[in-house]
Length: 58
Image (cartoon, rainbow, N blue to C red; front, side):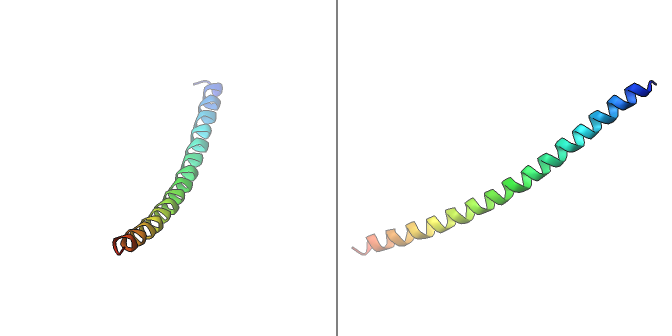
């Protein structure tokens, strides 16, 4: 095989590994963002439930 082909293959593999690492990092960031949003949603739900209970007492 030609040495140039190995060079091209090596660059493509490196590019794929870089893309994989970037996707893993993005996935971790999105997972953290999702966790924060779920916590926020839980807090809003608790506040809405409290308001509804107060309204039921009126």
